[in-house]
Length: 219
Image (cartoon, rainbow, N blue to C red; front, side):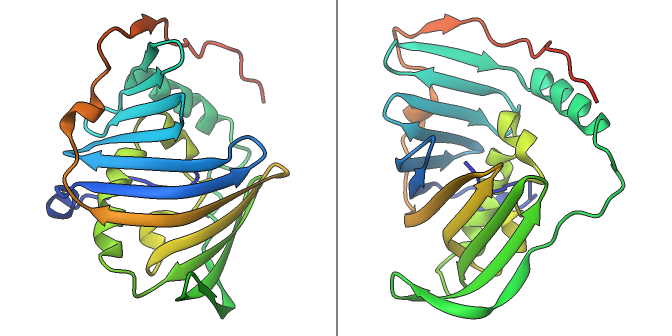
């Protein structure tokens, strides 16, 4: 979820179905994470008991809680209002965005030669290992950006670089977020058919009230 993905208008590339598997290691989450992409929609299986469905066209997000067979829908307008409130509280809204910088070295990850990059933003420091020769890396970035910029994921804009900032595929990433370290490792990225049923709420799941985001935000 910390891939820093935002909207990129590339309709032809975005038509392909994709399945991306990552291995995540961190204090709050460890284990595999799978992302399915199809027809402008994405499903992120964050853990065995938790999945999120994002509609890239509407920005609506549905969180599935498999253990209790329930789901929660968060409309795009609700997260958009929260984002506007957060942006209005930035100490320097006109400040230039952090940039992805080459570290000046190359290292091998899983037998692939990768160039190392660094990035630093408010409360976040990151190191990325990027394989420039990864097949269809640009196509995958285009497909992911539209989906993962919508809904709650869009709130993370600026916390990490955009996929289009990378000159290839991120094979490994190490992020330190407010003192908490998270490592993601690309296991596989395949362009293959995805079942449309994966993006539907399973039968028998009960809807829960969605959060209102009406808590006070102070400068």
